Image (cartoon, rainbow, N blue to C red; front, side, top):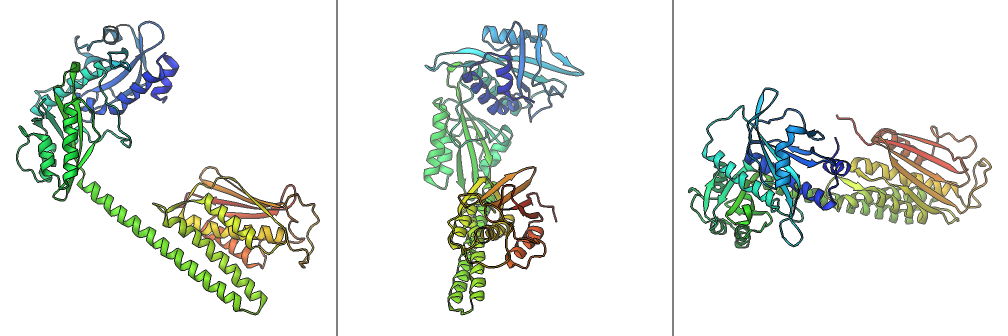
Length: 512
């Protein structure tokens, strides 16, 4: 299904500013739909005469929908859009007409013009129409709650027609929560409560206010209830700002161990301030879980920090032991162990600074590659380069993969570009490319990570057996790739000389 922007750009001549305003409406109109007990459809005129295109739709959570099928992308014309033409052409809300039928569902049509105010604040032009269609199959005598919902919905509908709703969204606010069903309070122009839904009353009871809210000065009440005076002042100022016609950011109030989120919206139909709408939501359990997660994350990061410190201590001890060992073979083995331990410590160092159990792996690879060129026993200056990105990897993959890459990079430098007097079997004659370099390439494809470590060195020796090799480094690599990583590895001659190690690592682990 095409997006609102795609449909508008393909079928209409709406400007980018017009489409942005329609996006703001679609991002906040669940509120109006729930208050209206009705489906909302956003219609824009199509290039040409008398046809409209539906570019967005929202269903109410407070009542049954009037449409079982999605209407987005539907183009209609003729008598079916007469109410839309009136709202669009005359710039007024249309409420006349008899009920219409969709299959065996009766519905009432209304049409609300969408006006985009000019930059100077003057009344702007109508750019679209919101269809408000109510399912009448469950019509009944409305309760006090429903009457207050419908009255508030009419005020917001008029504000859409005026171009004053929705208000601009504040930085960091990605959702329109709280919603109507969480709790609704309506204020008069003086800030006194004229209606509070049962859920709103319950939310204030959690804060320690047991009396009924009707008649209370809500700004003063919020200031009085809040445990933190500054928090209470901010919550009160937000309500006062809404009464002045402004749209303040959402506020939280903490009292008696409970937390309530509030959102204040001005009510200004036809530009006349008549009060404010305050949506409230009890988020006590949400904040308790947030605090528990923060504590857990801090504990996990501290554990990774301590593991990193312990690994660095182990590496230091091995380094000291290597200096005291007289046998060259033992010294080399200890130095290799130091490098392996240090590579694992890099992962835990990164995890200790991360908010989750995943790491940005590119930086780790770059550090391991740099270390490999510095410590490798070779007389040749070898360049290192990474192509592509490993992306974010979970800790269980990163820890094993960094050891594998550490071994492969060291092998590429030391055996691809050995010292001039190194003995051993003669390599297959190949003309090395210049300058000497090792390239690490990474890309993801269908939840699989493909990695290649390629050098332009002397190539594999004659008779090389990657499966039966006695080198400890290659044994570690094979064990980690096939065991911990559940992947595969192939060592082969490069297409233009040198050696390639090709890794395939699945990123989607099987459960259990």
